Image (cartoon, rainbow, N blue to C red; front, top):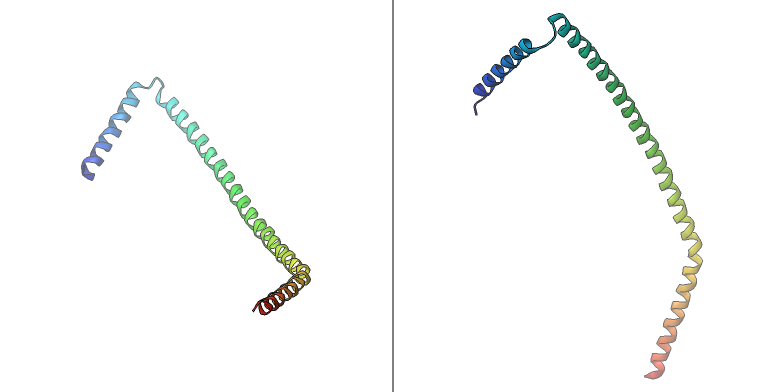
Amino acid sequence: MSAKSFLSGFLIGGIAAGITTLLTTPYSGKEVRRVCNDNGKAFLQHIQELKIDLNEIKDSIKTVTVEGKTVLSDFIEDLKQSLDTWKEEIKPHQELLQQELDELQSTINELENDLK
């Protein structure tokens, strides 16, 4: 379908719908203009309310993002401190286990030498 035929069909359909509406409306021209004006004002009011609501949502998202970054960085710092503390607490146990492993290895070596 070419753009020219689509555009002409759209234009002819719009004109036909407008004429049909004007000829079949049960209201006078003044009443139709008043209703259209009232509906236009109500539509603009709804658009303004929507704009205000969207701005509030945008501000809320900004606030949540900033607070989320702060909380996340605090959590990561606390986690690092906990891991460092845990490493320090476990260090003596690691050294003791290493000593015991060394003793076991030397005992195994002695037993192997005795068996030869």
